[in-house]
Amino acid sequence: MRLISGIQPTSAITLGNYLGALKNFVKLQDELTDVDILVFIADLHAITVPQDKIALKKNIKSLAALYLACGLDPEKVHIFIQSEVPAHNQLGWIMECNGYIGELERMTQFKDKKVKQVAGVSAGLLTYPSLMAADILLYDADLVPVGLDQKQHLELTRNLAERFNSKYGETFKIPEPFIPKVGEKIMSLTDPTKKMSKSDENPKSSIFLLDDINVIKKKIKSAVTDSEASIKYDVEHKPGISNLMTIYACISKQSIQEIEEKYKASTYAEFKEDLAEIVASEIEPIQKKYNALIQSKELDIILDQGRDYANFLAQRKITKIYQKIGIGRKR
Image (cartoon, rainbow, N blue to C red; front, side):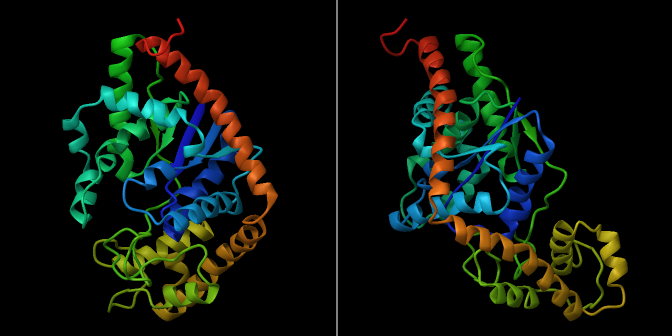
């Protein structure tokens, strides 16, 4: 059985990315001992919108180091950079040719990003779900960890796989969504009705894993709450404090009920003070590991090993696919 997932290296990783995805990857590698896990840096997906090339190159390596600093074990997980495996592009084009413009235009993320684009909208922004499908199908992945914002793309992947299988014979596994039990959606610290985002213009909205520890503490202490100073979980009426309680629960492994009981007589300031220390104690070791890894030979060795393993699987698969559709000279 195989599981695959990836994150775009578009900017620094937020606390939301860590609690919602990376922390889960670490949990999965320890729990799913009989599953082959591949985790990649989705740099090809990043260029669907304009990127500064120097920043992108830096972010690619930085994300790889953060994967490891957050606890991914290269003995259990294969970590690689998407663009270093050419078969992603090769199968991405084949998926484009088997997809329909109408189904791509229905993708919610495309609609949302199209509205935000100031300059022209790239064709890649429309077709990148085809590449995402290739990322998954190339490795015969059985399971794909998905959040609510990616479920539509996985459904398209399944449709493309079934369509290809119907045309050319059984070729691809039909992947299933894997929705982890742990790992919540972390909201903005300044507007708790919106998801914490790497691209938020307000620097106080997001906590980044590489933020200075004192900055992290200040962001938590200044987070939006409400006028009713009671520490109760109520997403509809008290989204701010509910978001902070979610962060507390994810890191401390205490239940929301336990947190409510613990702080029933406390003020918001007292709760935030404790949360700031909890978040800092979680992130500080990550930063130390990251700083030790980012310029090390070890990081390149791990990425080379991941690339070689991914290329072995991918090349074997793309050769079979080419034979199925009649591309190339080999019979």
